[in-house]
Amino acid sequence: PIELRDFVDSFDSEKLGVYLDIGNLIGYQQYPPHWVELLGPRIKRVQIKDYRENFDWTGNFSFCDLGTGDVPWQETIKSLKQIDYKSTVIAEMLPWDETLLARTSSAMDALFDF
Image 1 (cartoon, rainbow, N blue to C red):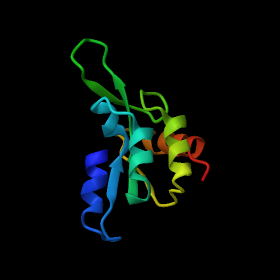
Image 2 (image 1 turned 135 degrees about the vertical axis):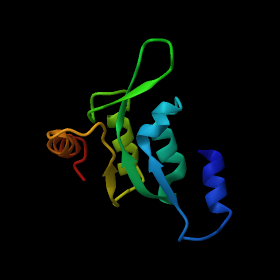
Image 3 (image 1 turned 30 degrees about the vertical axis):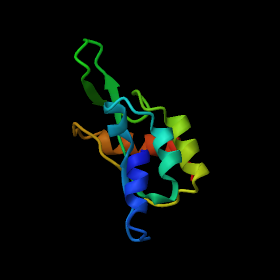
């Protein structure tokens, strides 16, 4: 996150920012709250999903419902509040089924109270 922060800052423009994909950070064994804290106001949009690591020694991750995977949601949301993030949060949820939208909406309501 330090390199990304410095890269964005090097342009000295309010028009340039970061579209932060919280779920993908887990896939790279990163800690999302750390990224949020370091990038701060440079974060223009947030995309969320949840992953669960497959414990078969392959290092692969599988999509799962929000709040049921390995993303540290409580800490991540706390850090978003600390930087006063008030823009959109976009959910990327796979695989599709007829109940996915309702489950995702309920999970987002439970996770985000701002």
